[in-house]
Length: 451
Image 1 (tube, rainbow, N blue to C red):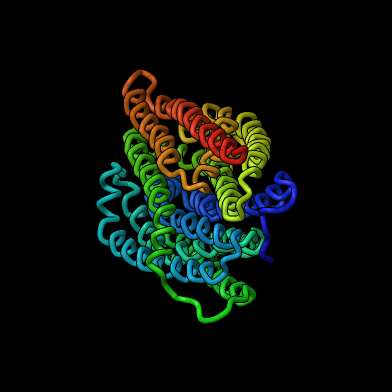
Image 2 (image 1 turned 120 degrees about the horizontal axis):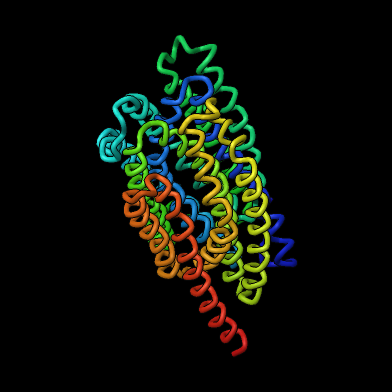
């Protein structure tokens, strides 16, 4: 069901819209969590390290899918808020076509340069073959990742955050059982084990993607327009690109930064890689949740701007911050107090270096979740309002600080611990910048409203 985010109490509207998005990302993260769980529990520590090592490169491809999601979603939200339904349909078709072309290019690039990327990040020789195998199968299913993300962006733009959640919930739960099936009962077919994990994810993502696209086209039929709709518009592509390209650059530079950090981590051996792989899955569950709610904030902002209701934006911002700070407090307490039990989901050995590494990472970064969550809500407003320069500046500051400090601090007596300490410093600095940019924008549109 399409929902207008420009009417009703902002806190209630946002909660009803964003919570299904939050639940969706929990299930979406189950894909990678399930892969790491099965790899660590049913195959071995090296398999866990291989999946985690490849994961950082897959995030680079995900950056492009996320950018297409945001670009299409914000533009469609604006047309939906302004009730320009013909342009809305053209924006959807344009987003799907341009996303497919970009995805095809990335698949070719990934197939050609995937092995080179693994070598550049100092992948240890004992996990190189498994890392390459997992990455190759992931790249083969990149179309599913792209089109699923664009489809969910369209649903969100129409105010519907529940439909994609149902698809994702079913496919994520199925992925867990498929992972286990492919690495146990069918282990004779998938001899290395890691390939079974990758193919299970490939199949489940494919099913959720196809279902999402079918329902997108069904939903578009309910949006009545007069005359024939254009299948593609370069003008609308420009609008999408204006939002998508900075978002892609932001996410891809973050991914490149994470790849550089992964290269630093890889110099400390497979045990540290495995510990990092386990903890970073748990950390990404939280950060992706905040990012998704921030995306919901972008949709809310874009719809209200399209409807000429700027006065609702600050109330939405306050409601969004309250929501993510509460969620962050729960995760912070769980990770800080129960870190050992959570890392044990992926790692069997309670006393090894991998386990101690994973616990240490969670204890260092989890107390700062309320900081980074506030930043991502402010970023959501800036993105929805088209303030992309400010959004990118704050994000790149965080990235550059984390990469530089990880390199410097890890070369001191702190060793690998120095890498984990770089996270809170980058988050604190970037959050201050995002809030400053948001309040500058807020003061400006308050003056416009009064005038």
